[in-house]
Length: 285
Ligand code: MN
Image (cartoon, rainbow, N blue to C red; front, side, top):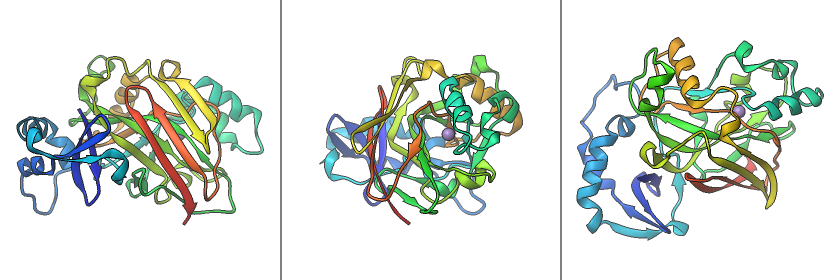
């Protein structure tokens, strides 16, 4: 299934060029009071919601995809995990451009470890990216985003993919400079997730997906997830060794080479085959 959050926080089932309004399926969610359970309620109860969608889809109201605003398909992750320099060619471009990339950027992922982005940086394609430090270089980084489906604490890589709810396109927007990654990558709207969640059963091999990013129709990044240095299962193993991953937590798996700056007025188009395509405008904050 391809599930989106659209318009006024409606739940949508994407069907070709249309979205079916299946918001009513959220009625299966339990009523909650503070303190809320960790993670994203929608993702935590995804199986029950999918069953309910199956029962109501034939009577759902249908909208043209082109007419709706798409928001991030996850609303309440506890963590957005990032994988630094996880493609060899991106490491090479960082080493070759010391004026742009910090010295930290030239170290290997196995030495640096993973980083966290503020969950408040999460945005959908409809919100777009709002440049927070317009005088500084801010780069696009397209990444395969993995959404965790169930509580994962010290999971082996052999078991890891069973903990994945699905996949989406991630943009790990980044201000270049010397500060910690967690600061430079955590501005509001700097973690774009969309255009929808593709449930894991639809992606036969997440390690064989073409990913591409265009800015104003100009090709900037093009790669395949087979070239990830630390693969998806190993990222889940590594992250969950250090902290429990909760339903809805997002792992941005790393960006390939071709990163480059964006400016207000630019339009990014990001594609991952099997997942989808999203258009993301860039504006001044
Ligand atoms: Mn990144």
